[in-house]
Image 1 (cartoon, rainbow, N blue to C red):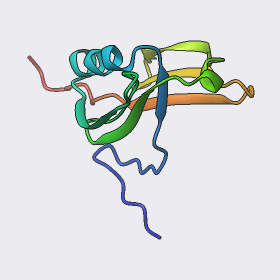
Image 2: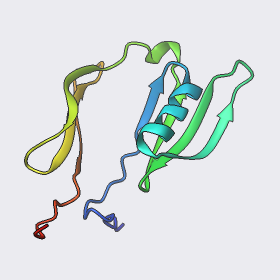
Image 3: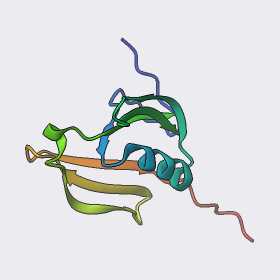
Image 4: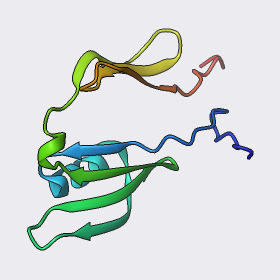
Length: 113
């Protein structure tokens, strides 16, 4: 099986699933804050949602948290732009595994003004 790189040169098959409180509000936030596109949304009779979204082609899911997912992750360091050309942050999941969340930043222009 071949995995093709995206525009940044990285290839991935990991699809994040964000477990959130108030999924509808989170979806609207991701649209405004990150320019995310909503691909699909399923709404349960109680109003809970599961939505598939994408940011620059990177797909992810947003779902209202279920009781077993309310334990949450712990921030190790917040997502921020780094001097070496990446935006990254780190969280620890409930099992203690650390997840580095990163993407390359757009190259800075070297053309004289």
